[in-house]
Length: 389
Image (cartoon, rainbow, N blue to C red; front, side):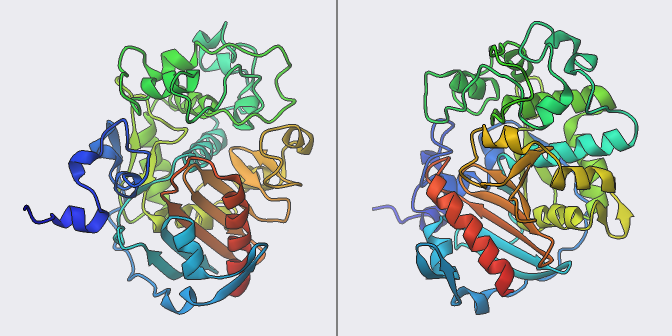
């Protein structure tokens, strides 16, 4: 009998068991979410080559009990129940705790899925501040080929706030849906290659209702935003991230982003980065656009992102159950309580609470893409943790 490899001992399965058809399913996602580049074409985002400070010990907090709606629970028990891979906490600009599951090592990158949208919107804000980009302009000002698609009479603001009247459903688990075709175009699913991401995006038609009235969470909006920022800047998305975000933040590790067959970046969900570098994004937002004493994005953009947006469109939309008084602006969620966050499927969170000066990153490998009850538990967990630290 063959002895198990170190890989099998660490993950409970063989590397050869993980394939493009299974990489987002449990238990394989415990490994694949940290190694997306072995499965999907990926572009490098250059880091600043800094030295990461020593991991902050979080062991003292793991046994602390938190009061959640379903009862009290230790921090450790919640992390286990929610399939967490990593947890990083900052307070007042300092890292005060890092925790990693046994299958994730400090310094590893992890895919952040739709928090990628929030980062891409920061790029848009930076370009707006540099005069390259107008959020109120029509999409066709930057992408003339969008004429005739759902975006033909939409503005960039509609894209940023997910209020495009898009005839498309975010059907993660339906293999016969347009969403499955979308994932093939991104090379995230087998069978891709004949249709590129941009080609797919510009084939989507609109619904009959006006743009701007209903928050509809549709990932194609954010991938087309990536195409748009490339057109506005003349630079590729990985280059923009490195120059405009990773470098100014002082990110200590390289990032990565998945690309399609012609190199179009998956800005709706393809970014991978370390927990600490993602926390640095949240801290920059908490500092109203400043990192390391230097301006990254304008204070006006951060203020707009964290306070503006249509409550009415939110309440008519998909996620009103998550934040009853929330809003969605520039691809960030507002809780209605002063905190705000980026959220990705399978349990990725970047939570910022200015009142307590706390930033929390949680990376996970939840078995299902969306788990509404667990989303509510996560929000309660972050709020309780922010009060505790």
